[in-house]
Every structure is written in structure tokens, then in C-alpha cells.
Image (cartoon, rainbow, N blue to C red):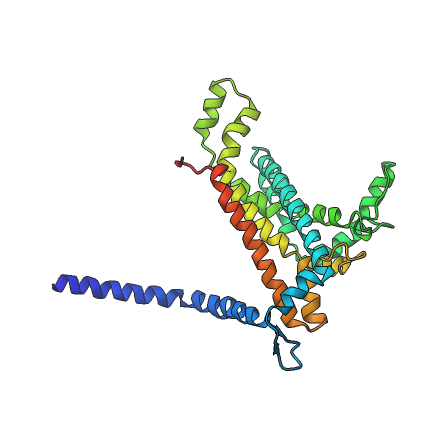
Length: 301
């Protein structure tokens, strides 16, 4: 009995210290995430503008969003196109970049650092740099196209090319995703690659039947994180285009910002934010549901 009591007390002490050391993270999650989310859910059911007292309006904000707000529908389509385009192209570019960085060449460490640099560049500095690159009059891109005798573009200053231009800009910062792919490439079983060589396979067979299946968990992770990040894109539109031209880059996060901090409609903005949460959750759940058919884990079925 004494031994059982001692083990029980020891376990209690371990649990106490475990919760004690984890308490900063738990409190931070509750104070800065859970409580604000609950508050925003309540605010989404009110007419609240900070200055005056809030007024409970029920689902009126959601009805106005779905049936009366034309900006909501346009921003949702724009954000969806950008999220899918940037995520897919970023995944492909990052995978190609990781394959190149995984090659044994001189200066490998230098190239890895160089490709990762865009990730650590501050968002504002990056956006200002790309504003110059996209400038239709003296920007670098149009200067190169002119020297090559190719037609120039208005890039982000044209309604038709604004979203493709921002997708191109997003792909430029694929170094972080490439680094995760590179870590996955280090774990590809070499014995399987050698088995393909023994069977007479070439580099394509190695990639198709060994490398790519081994990277599916990495693709799965990057796909989810990329979509979540793309749906919340804000700084590019806010700094570079302010949602223009003709609201062609009015991303959903910028729409929330306008309603909250420019029009002081915090209840309406909270409703928009909760709709975004539901949309992201649906996409994430769909990816998780389909993952069993294309994600392969080592040692699994």
C-alpha cells in the first residue's frame, strides 16, 4: 500500500509540474485565442461600432453578407482563385527547388541560404520591392520584356493581370516550403532508389514511384498550411493595390479590415471573419477526408 501511495503521490507531483510548465502556453491560448473568438462570435450577432452601445441583431449581419453585400461575393471569388493558384504553384515550385537544393553541387549551403532569403524579408519591404518590379513605366520586368522585344504588361495595375501578378509574387517566397520538402527528401529510403536502379529504372521512375510517394505527407502538410495562409492574404493588397484596380485584388481579409477599421462595423466584420473560419475549416476537412487515398506513411498501409 505504501508503494502504491508513493507512486500515486509521485504521479500527482509530475502532473502538477507538467501543468505548471505548460500553463503559459495554455493561458496564452485561452486569453489571446479562445476568449477573443468567443467574443467575436457574440459581436457577429450585434451591430457594434465601438463608439455607440452594441445592439443585438441576431443573424441580420449574416443575411446582409449573403444576400446584399456584392463585395463579399467578389472578394470570395478573388480569394479563392488566388488561394488555389498560389498554393498549387508554390507547391510545384518549392518541390522543384528542393530537388535542386538536394543535388550535391559546390556551394550547396550558399544556394540554400539564397533561396530561403525571401522568407525572412519583412513583408512591407518585400511589397515595396515588388511594387518597383511591377511598375509598368520603369519596372525591371517590363524593362526585360522590352529588351527581348516582347509585349509588356501593366501587372498589378491592370484588372486582368493583378491576381496572376500577385500569385507570381507569392511563388517567389516559396523558400520556406522548399526547406520542408528538402527535409523530406533527406528521409527518402535510399534502398528503394537503389532497387529501382537494379530493375533498370531511370530518374523519372525513381521520382514517380519512390520520391513522390515518400513526400506525400510533406505535400499534405504544405497544402493545408498554404491554403490557410492564402485565404488570409492581406499585406499585398493593402500595401500594393489597396484592393484595386476596380476591386480586382479585394481579398477577403482586406474586406474584413475595411469593415472593421475604416467603417467601424465591428459586428459585421466579426460575421465576415466567422464565415472565413467556416470556409477554411471546410477546405481543411475535405483535404483530411481525401488524404487516405493519396498520402502514404512509412510503415503504413
